[in-house]
Image: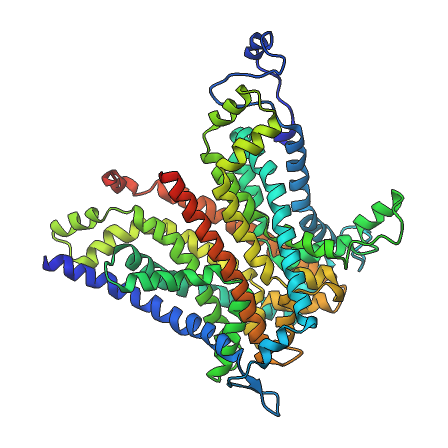
Length: 286
Length: 298
């Protein structure tokens, strides 16, 4: 049919501008990062393409490796805490929210659209040593040696605060979709609430949890604001190194190599996620 | 908060109570006893979610320059913001960039969405992959990559690079949202219009686009908000002179206490919240008009 063919050609033409745009401004830019991570700097400090492995070797030095490991630890902890908080929150909203359900979900989503920097800045002022929170704690008798700002805990807390919405929403969606009678069945079989939750609810909603894990871990690994505003100089993450290499440090090839490392780590995580969801859907089909 | 208040046990429960010590209830809705621990976690969660926002808002009205002691109400930091030529200029830059990225990404994204749903060529699969990569790339990687690309083609960082980078970043979001809407449309409506003598362009203009407007409008508002608030990508692609507001805020934070940041932050918060509520509500408001064609939906 010629008219069908003609309309198919129209739809294919519509693909072109977007595909071209993304290829030029995104894919080729990513390729540049990969290429420059094998580059070097000339005498003037300008980046030059090359085929050296010097940057890769540089990353494996303890100064950098330590920061990469720290970023992994912080991001994994933040993701785990998000998961622990999201289940009760999503459960309460999904099963006990009643007619306020949509309003409560909106209340979670709205702050996420408020400027991230400003929200982190809010925490910084609250948690600083003479801030409102610390003053209350001192009044309650907490020793003056105790600090929150400039600790690992503050950075992890910042990451949790910044990205938890990405965990609550998918977990909420899968709890919402889950058949509530499964939970009743668990209780009817004399499972305690906790046991029913762990052996019935969590496995039935694991697709949402997996999605949440990826959605939190990905941006947390690339974050540099939480570490900068809440962590101080001793808690830097890989994002801070990258930022430094492109601005203050002016070593673009090393920065590119760090960026590529970050991408590779996240690709591995993505790959594991896709394999797991594929396995789950195969099992569900059986 | 309304969720935390325990509702009185319904009378039905008392009948079952005799048979079960554990106060199990069999009801169609599947509601069991409120897990008190989970409710407490939820309440704390909401308090912490809004605590830093409340701090920024409250201290923006402080008379003192302090961020720790609240002294009294005043609007001086708002006046300071509007009298600061650099900051108001930055506000203009942010609005400009957000507007350009919004229009650019909605136009390109809408075309891409139609192509992805309806084209049966091999290009579709490639376009789909290319469109999805930005969504799984951390923003800092996008920022670094854009910075290198612009440097590579000797494009000075400034307004143009900002607009290009933010548009690129936004296209994926728009496409994902609009693709879902296009997939819901029934192509037979367009064919019916053409059978009745409309040209393809007329069919698209008179039949398809009116159905797409609400989704396009709300994704446009969404993108405007995201780009207006965006910091990371802006930080990597902006130059020295026209700097967007979020980059200015960043340098101000690094240089220490500046209560006018609280005022700017509060204004941005109010604007973002209004826009997001609009984006959530608008499709519902518009959806009632002219949706009669949805009767064709199977």
